[in-house]
Length: 233
Image 1 (cartoon, one colour):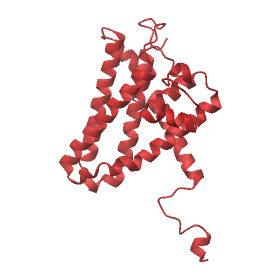
Image 2 (cartoon, rainbow, N blue to C red):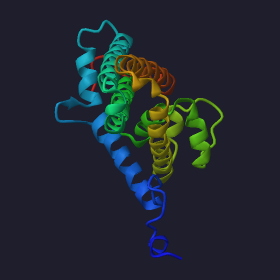
Image 3 (cartoon, rainbow, N blue to C red):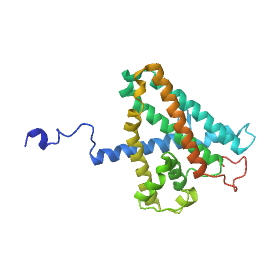
Image 4 (cartoon, one colour):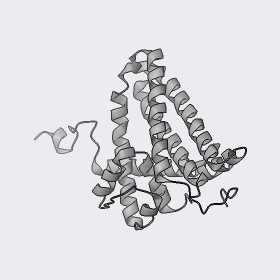
């Protein structure tokens, strides 16, 4: 056996050791929850944004609609600008674009949850926000994590799970999102043409975000116990 193979230098460069993959997933989850839900610097968190959107809204559902519209515009603009460079910027821009997309999507779902009366500091709610990002795969990820559900995966269902179980589910979502980094890169081969690539990027981001918004609707139905005007109280 050669010296290179004995120390692992001949491993495929794209393969990560289990420990390295785990560390990347944990960093991703921290980013989504710390930035997407709680906010950081000028990027408002879900509670702050929900309060801002409720001002001037005729109803709580109007605030939810404004929330989805705001994040759809932001995602479309981000996808368009990132895609303009075509394959020249693809290796650098794509990971940042995908991460940025998921931060926006996380905040959109968390804001919908806050407007509808859910406490985003509760572990079950935070897991529900993450599960909304993977759409129809949520039930399968729960099953693989040892959780078997027969109906909609709502916050009420998740709130009955233990803390360690919720952490396992969160990591399963994180791994699925990491896989999507490569899948979404391959799905955007049209970016070889800069202008067309920008339009494709904006369209894909908008379509995907609206699908996530629909998942948030199912995951966080209106909470009748929440009085209007008590966002963040």
